[in-house]
Length: 266
Image (tube, rainbow, N blue to C red; front, side, top):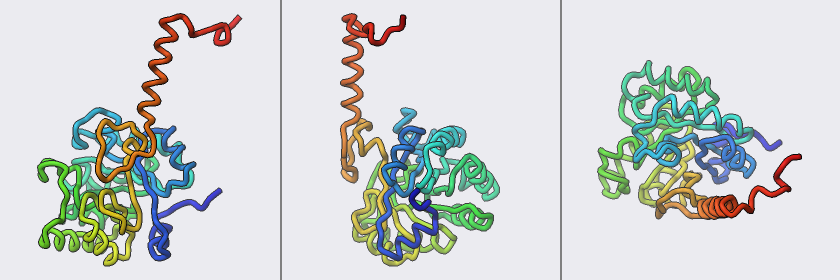
């Protein structure tokens, strides 16, 4: 069996110059496929709200919903590092609540949690979690839980002032104890600068080719999402294949072509 990926593995890979491959998963079948395909990090993202639950944003996703999907994904993972998003309001309000909620997700099978932002409450929560043994992945740039603050899915860090603020935030989450950092929707040159500055690995999504790794939403990669994005590449059109198969099934049932004697019992 291939080597189990851990937080220490990712840090070693950054030092060795090996790229980290990450993808989201929300259920047992896709988690198992991702793990078997050699994906290094599987994230149970709060993007489950958009991709699986039909929400317009990630904000309505609850801790119970995340935990439900996490338990399913846990069953399909053997090699990959399993990280889970902490949903909106499960952290950033009080440090004790954040630590308790993170612990709940760890008990449900996570091997690390991911938090957005670098406000002082978030930094305090990272320190407290790390102090009791909960690994934390940070997330900066376009942070979806702050989508209304940004006024939409807008590239961050384009001005010199904003870029400097993101660099300082990246250093702050590293100093707080985060073992890695997701950079979302920022200029490639800024991502390169942050990646070269930090000792922890950076994982980009819409942040160019210079990060230590990449993460994508599974549904965007395989054609199950309704929208297309500049930062995502479609490697398959599974949605079209599913629709075609269901149309054929419906037609055969209506025409009496299915089931046949082959699919019946005596």
